[in-house]
Image (cartoon, rainbow, N blue to C red; front, side, top):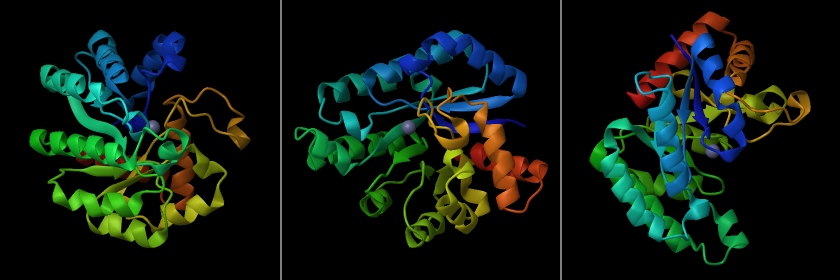
Length: 257
Ligand SMILES: [Zn+2]
């Protein structure tokens, strides 16, 4: 059994000097990282971590993808497809992908249309190659829920789920997963969402290198945090730590395999 960090950006430059420490920890504590990417270069980076450190191990799973923040760089899309085809055997899934109007406000060239083209391209790659997807759905849950049924997607997770309860039900009713992170320890409104989720469709994540406040005091976010989150979630869900660990492991295995 593993503990699984279902969404972390280990190819981010912030982690560069900590790779050895983090990877040793993952091996010793049996923590698996589902390592997501945001554009062509970070996809390349994630793949090289796999080839360099975890070639014969499942402890690091590679997700490649183009994040909505980088949808305006259309040249990435062609390069990305070539990379996807050439490294197909090392790729476990597609992510982090999705839609986010926040980025259109920050950069007018990152239009909703461009984001949709990139997102649909990612979904069609996932469909054709039978890969799960990790979804960024900030301010776009409804739109994503409208688009997803057009594709035969094997499994999807709404990462860092922050929507309302009725959409949570729509997500779970369709068999999609939701994931929760370190903010569970200090954000009471997320407790309700966790408790309302179908327990067989919950995943745990850190989304590192995002830093967390309050009890985490801005320390380095590493996959080691998942054990703490699982423990806290077990209290909220009134399960033993062992039982919830087992359920979450089965969930993540079903999500990726
Ligand atoms: Zn992320």
